[in-house]
Length: 162
Image (cartoon, rainbow, N blue to C red; front, top):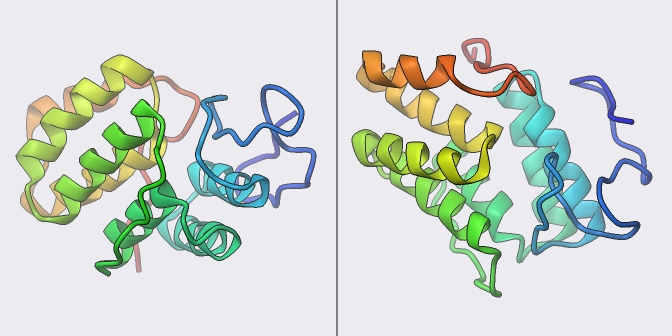
């Protein structure tokens, strides 16, 4: 059972095997169980502030959780350094996507995102981070077409941030 967007997680809100540290789509993450739960909350967040808070809590729960660190850095404009500890392939690619977006290279980020989504299917934080960065450049039609093909497991856009 998954909580509705914006609802807090309980310690029983995990997917896959009992005790597995996974994200919202059941992919393993290199993080502690509490950090993975906060990351799932960030994936389901209904807006940027909620996602940012959940990512901060994920990093507090596991300071070496590079996936959450990269997303938090991209959303807040900070430049924290990760503590590489052997991420899963999908995590490494996600991190490459969001770091490209955060560095201002929107075209590269969008190209990497297309590749990433072709491999993983859905990655709401990677998509939303790239979409926000592309929005500042003026989202191109091709990127809009990509948004139309995303799975409907997460809202495709966050409302504009205050």
